[in-house]
Image (cartoon, rainbow, N blue to C red; front, side, top):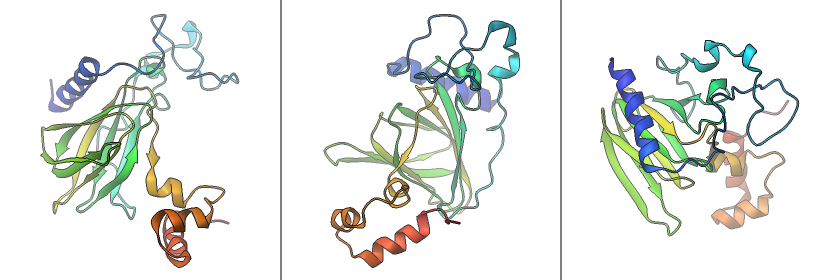
Length: 219
C-alpha cells in the first residue's frame, strides 16, 4: 500500500476511535446523495438503488497539489458529500490543504466536526483556542498528526521556505467552515460597521480597509 493510502486509513481510523459521529446514523447499506432532488432534508435524499454506480464513491481531486494563488497562501480541496455522493449518511469526509511558503489557513471553525490533520509534506505551526481563551499550539512535520476539537477556532501556518500539505479527516460528511475574518468582514449584507468598530476597537477607516481586501468585488 502506498503512503497516501496509509495516511487515509490512519486518519479515518483515528476519527472512528476517538470521536462520536454527529451526523445522523445510516439505517441502510447505502444512501447515495441525490443532489438533484427538490426535497430539502438534513442531509441529502437517497438515490434509487438502480441509479447508483461506483463513481458515486470515487473522487481523485486530492491526489495532487492544488494551485495556491490567493493572498492567504493556502488552498483547501474538500472531499466531502458534495464531491462524493456516496458519503451521504456515513459521517466521514476528507480535505487536502496545500500551503505556499509562509501560507496561512486563517482562524476558522468547523461547527459539525472534529478535524484530524496528517502532514503530507513540510512543517507547520498549528493551534486551537478553547472557550476559555487558552491556546494549544505545536509545530508538526511530515508524518505527524494533530487534532482540532469540534467547533473550536484553529489555524495552520507554513513557516517554511518550501510548500507544505496536509490531509484532513472529519467525522461529518459536510463539516462546514466558518472563517472568522471573512464571515465578519465579507458577509452579505454587511455586518453593521458600528458592530465591527466596537468589537475590534478600531475606527471606520480600518474596517473599510479590511472589507476592501476580504469582500468579493461587487459588480
